[in-house]
Each structure stands twice: as C-alpha cells, then as structure tokens.
Image (cartoon, rainbow, N blue to C red; front, side, top):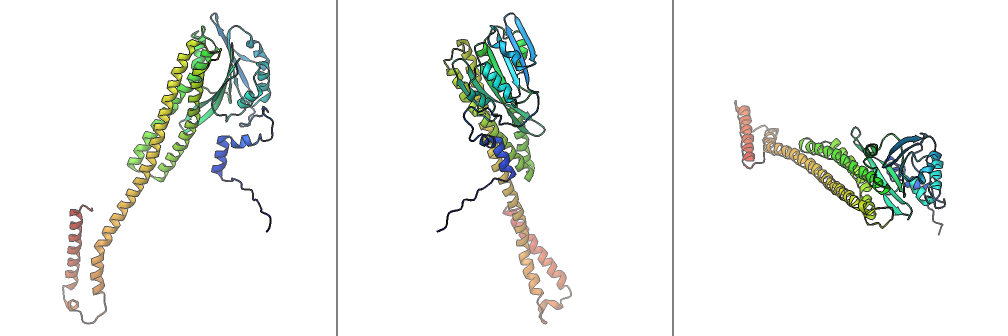
Length: 373
C-alpha cells in the first residue's frame, strides 16, 4: 500500500475570507508560535497618529487637554483627582507597551487590548479592573453595523480607555457631564459605569434603526417581494448575528461587575451597575425578538413565492383544461376523411365555433361556482 497523501485545502471564496476576517481568525492565526503576552497588533494596519486626551477632575474643577506625548500622562497615576485617559488608536504597539509598563498592566491584558476581535469580558486584577466592550455604529446608508472595541482599565484614581480609531465614539455625553461638574464628587468606578452606560444606551439607537428597516421589509414582503427582498433579509440576519455576538457577552460582564467584591467599586455604585444590567437585558430581549421576526420573514417570503407560483399554475391549468375539449373537437374535424357528415354543411364552420364557445362558457361558469377562479 502506498503512503497517504494529505492535500491542503484553502478557503478561497470571498464569503469565506470575509467571514474569517470578521471573526478575527486569520489575525489570531498570525500569532501562532509566539509566546503568551507577545504584543502584536492584530487589527487593521493604520498609519494614523495616536491621539491621547485627558480629563482630570475633582470637586474643585476639571482640566481637559490633548497630551503631546505618552509621557505627558504618567503623573496622572498618582494624582489625588480622578483622571480619564482616552487613547484613540491601538495600532502603535510602543505606546500601548509604554502605558502598560508605567501603569503596571499585565502583558496578557495588553495583548487583549491589541486584539480588536477580543470577546467582551471583565478581569479583576486586585489593583485594577480590565473591561472589554464593543461600541457599535449603525450606518443608515449602507445599512451595516460597524463595531469598534473599547478596552477600559479602572484603577484607584485613573481610568484608561483604548479605542481603535479616532473621530467617533459614544462618550460625548460623559465628557459634557465632566465639563458641567456632574461627576466631580464621584470616583473612577462611577466613571467606568458612565462609559459602559453610554455604550449600552447606544445599542438602543442601533436597535431603533434595525426596527425601522424590519418594518420596511415587512411592507415589501406583503406588497411585492422580489429576489432583492431576500438579499436584504439575509443581510439583516447577518447584522443581527453580529449584534448578538457583541451584546450577549456584555451580560456576563455587567453581572460580574455587579457581584464583584473589588475594593475599587464603592457600594453606592452597585445600584447603577444593576440598572445598566437591566438595560443590557432589554437589549438582548429586543435582539432575540428581531431575530425571530427575521426568521419569520424568511418563511413568509418562501410562502409568498410558493403561493405566487401556485396562482400561476392554477391559471395555466384552467386554460389547459378549457382547451382540452376544444382540442378534441378540432382534432376530430382535422382528420382527412373524405366522407364526414358535417363537411358539406353551409353553416358548419360557424356552428362548430359557436359550439366550442358554449363549451368554454359552461366550463368557466362551473369553475366560478367551484370558486377555482
């Protein structure tokens, strides 16, 4: 017997490549063989400059500035006030590595920060809490949901947030509350809650846009469904899978924070965490409801196409049934026999046509009485 030959199989289709890319499988595969904690950015390659903004506040007031370098934020580690350091851009590994070294962040945590395909989770490291969330944006023009990972480090007197790109986030409401002094008497735990709550509240806006699209598709299904309608339904189904993948793990994250015994979370903050947990449950319930509706829309589309085909077949069957006796009569008088009784009748042609019309009329009347028409 010969040796077995193993032929490598490669996924070469565009759909497969997009799916692998969206799930982050290819990027994770690129790190095979590297030691744990190896700092490699596995996301999209970018050349944008990393932007670092700082909000430092206490009961006396606040300070807002854009740091010129990563070293400009080092002293916020020991300030008595609350400092929120927001880093837009994780593609610069050296900046993330420097921040981690200065604020004593474990290399495995930094590895998760540099992986934008990380599943939402929470880790309590005693002197800081690490949280991963998915911030979503709904593009009404392309009808697609874009996700961006937000990593949050909650320390005793500082909160560090890492975002993939600059230019858009859902934290403007938190910034306005800081500017108006509404967070001056709160700690880092409440600031972290405010950031999480802003992300969860934005999910409701995403669901609102999806709900409007579902209503439009339902009207299209009832009116005149086409092949394009089916493509829209399947596109919406993919978006709901993406949304569910982002929201479901968040339930575990908020629940873990609500049960945490960390010294970094004050007792008065737990009620707010329970409130955002309720909001998360509402989002999950809405996602499941929309998924059921989309599954029902696919069934409605298939039933509608089947009913339309049945209507067409019914009409064709009725016409065929009417022409069966007519074809029989025409076939008889189409025979080439010399001696046929009606061939010499002066009004034979008109009589035969009238008889065929009467037969057709009687059959149509019968079909109407049977409600087949």
